Image 1: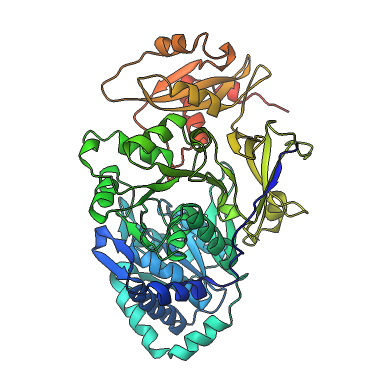
Image 2: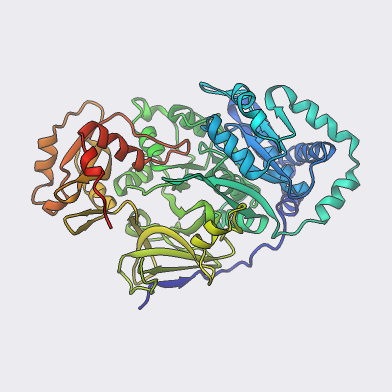
Length: 544
């Protein structure tokens, strides 16, 4: 049997724009909570959310923003972000998500590459002075006509919309098509400039809907979303999964804080909680974890990077998230391609990324020949269907490299598919370690190391070796109150995993280099390791 599967569906794709879908939800659930932002003291019903998006949509039109014009947003998680997401969709502008962690060079690049006419921005976030950074690059961004600081210009922008009649907005909304581009998200590669994945109403509305279906969301659900909006995890798995089902979006704060997230779950009686594995690890490790009442939780999503089996088991047991699911995907596929089901057997829910989503195709191919592999064979995961992006903004060459002539998105992820269609991600093609001709998948070594009682988190990378090409290195976070020596860890591995998989280098750390979404930057870990271990000469060895 070949590693190919197509997702069967009990519900057709939604053939409507995001605005049309939100209007239907408002008609059904207008008086129910739609959005709660604890850090800002904001609580909006669906009818109030609709009214706010109407005001902003008309405000943008009053500024002359036309369909397909790009509107940038540079802000952490705030209620204005959510209003902007739906308002731009309703009046046809393309929202450009700008990473809150960006500095001046990255900001300048994103504004110019997208051709943004308007930028909505927070005044500051953490140690970053957004207004100061924008001022530093403004002269180099000729297409940027205007910027509006959320902290001081928001109400003025909303008021500007009063000059636009309701029927003018209605006409604009009626002119939009669900295949129109509506969002640009910059994907961070390990090399080169970020690429702007361009997504349509159809892409992200349907993905959000089917994620909500998998989680069995109803208007009674309250979803705690501590993951960032600028990324699909926040704005699609979070916001759109909620709005397509009349559920409530609950936002703990501007950025992830473990204690704040759990306090919000308790205060708002949340039924679902999202996070990347490192977030759940941080929550479980809180010294006062037991004090939080998490009894209302039933489900949620762990995604964004490989999910350790042991962590998944703890989340189910200690956080009452017996129906937690794992999602797999990438920005370019809107993002989810596979998801575990609430009624999957335990071993499938904790040990795989589930099965293919409705209306989506998945295959696993030989990375070089492109031939579809047999079940259980490791190869590159490819996906095809409604969820595949329109392309990279203004970059046809990069688009052609990512999406082949048959419409398959090549993910760069190594995966296997079992006889029942469950997919397991075993690593990235570029993350695979080749030591003396032996292929080593970091995920496999990491899963083994999680069985050590002193290890809270482990991340495996390959570092250069003149003798073997690469050696295995692990960065370890220990559980509070425990100790572990390099030699003890290596002894623990001996006779339990193959000798060539045992880490040659061990580094004990408190945290890892991460993106703002909580994704661990293994390329940065490798760079730091080369410096610290003095492996520059080995790193300079040319390879074919």
